Image 1 (cartoon, one colour):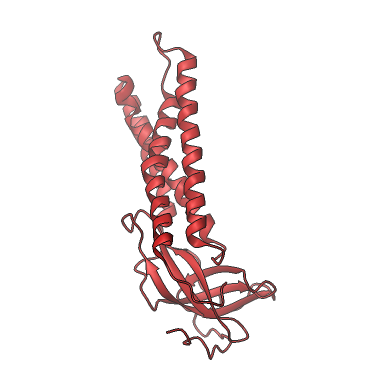
Image 2 (cartoon, helix red, strand yellow; image 1 turned 30 degrees about the vertical axis):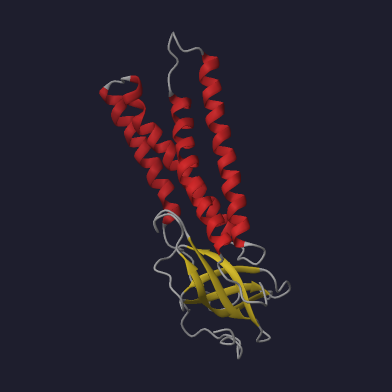
Length: 241
């Protein structure tokens, strides 16, 4: 967490937006192609080596797109970020792969001219895979804590002071925010965070969980405030308004 105010700059927006675009324009089609290549039957005119070649190519493209978009998000968040932001975006990448794979299963019967029963099975499996993948887009299931889970965890109120909804529609990518809070000594600190629960606007309140032994490590930011929670005083919280 930074002692200096953080802002969502043009470079930050470009990196985060490009990461979302790569995820949905490259990673998702790669999942589609990988799924289709895996389940596509081998015909007399299609040797096994050709299927392996295209399947491997689709898988390599998927891995590269995941790595590139992950590096872009890491660059957008910078050094001062919440601990769960990168893992949250990785879940979005897996969701894109899963949704692409589900689409591949759904369209597979049309590619091979399968019997009606295989249409039902394939489309059902594809819809199920897409439904499971879309669970990554649900709101944050965590609730604010009323007490630290262990002595080294600090709890305090945080507020969103900068927000950007991303280059993709809100349902397609998490929003990038800057959270401001005060540590146990009353010093105002800042961290970047990928937030899922919409709508998120300036002034949204939440709970910040951070490591007291490593003041630069913010564990997570959770929307909402627990009832009857006791927070340390933060007389300088409004310093940078």
